Length: 58
Image (cartoon, rainbow, N blue to C red; front, side, top):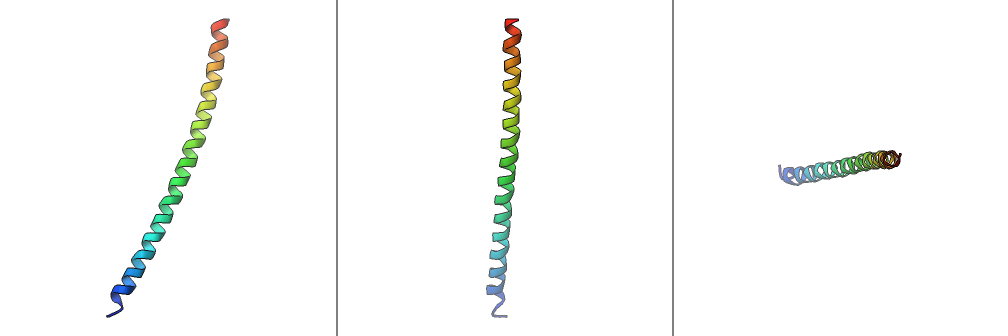
């Protein structure tokens, strides 16, 4: 019974560490996905603006 508090503490610290690393990895994936979608969106916008500029001169 004397070891219950230290064992519980160690288990909770390990669980918290696992949750922290999972959330860091998830945040990295979300940022990668958002940056890829933003760069593709910017590419599409630049393509659209070039089409618009040629249409305005025609």
